[in-house]
Image (cartoon, rainbow, N blue to C red; front, side):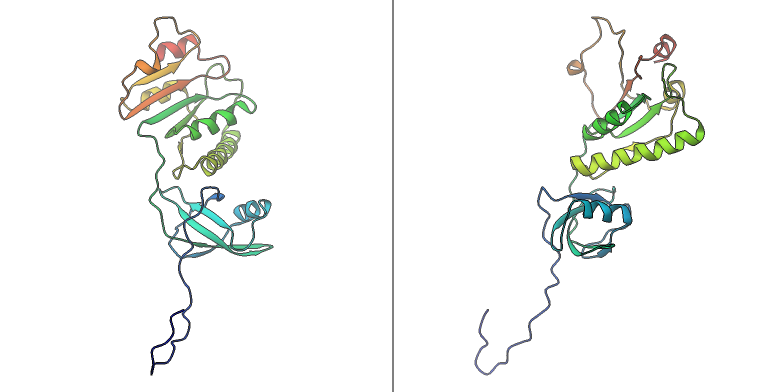
Length: 232
C-alpha cells in the first residue's frame, strides 16, 4: 500500500475485477457448447455441474472451459452451492492442439466396448473426422432409431476424450455410412487401409509422404470383405 501524499485524501479501495488467471495444466476441462466471453459468469448446465460436484471442487478452484470453436478459457469456480455451480471465465487463450495432418477415419462399427475405445483413441491421436461404417462383416446392425442413440453416445465419447487429452476442437462425427457411400463422397486425398490381407509388399506408414490430409480405413472385427477391399 502506498501512503497518500500530504494534502491528498486516500481514494476508496477499488473492486478487483481482474479475470481469473490462466488455469494450471492440471485444472479439470469442461466442454460447453455455447458462446463464451472473457469475464463472463456462467451457471453450469446440469451435466457439467454434476461433473464438478463429482470432482469435489470448491469455490476458488481452477477450471478450463472450451466450446469446440478453438482456444480455451481458464476459469474459476465462484459458486459451489449444491444445485448451482457458477464459473467466471478468464482471458481467451488461442491455444490449438490439432494435428497438421487432417485425417478422416472410416471406422467399421464393432461390438461392445471396442467401438468406444477406438473412438476415444482416435480423438486423442488427433483424427479430424470420423465416419462410422456399417461394414458387411459388422456384427452390430443399427436401425435408424438405434443409430441415432449410438451417435449421441459416440458424441459423448468424443467430448470426454477432448476434455481429457486437451484438444479444443471436437472431431467431426458423421452419420453412419456404408463403405461404398463413403468412398463415393470422400475427398481426393491419399487413402490408407489397414487390412488383414495386406501382403509383404504393402507400403509402410513411415515411408508415405503425407502432406495435409488423408483417409484411413479400418474394418470391424472381421475386417472388410473381399468386395469392400476391391472397392477401396
